[in-house]
Image (cartoon, rainbow, N blue to C red; front, side, top):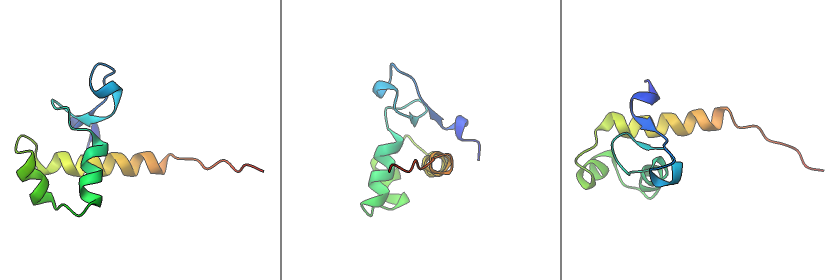
Length: 75
């Protein structure tokens, strides 16, 4: 999946937080909904203007962020 087809970050939209393109729905919001137990079907029902691929892109974005995360050991 090409994340850039679904996720964008613009300082003029939601203070630059990553959002689903063409919306003000942040990746953070979608991940929170999923972690709260909402299903893909639930989320698509709440936000009918997005698609399943947009939600999958949110998960892919989160995975990419974690993959590049580096832990710094503090003594």
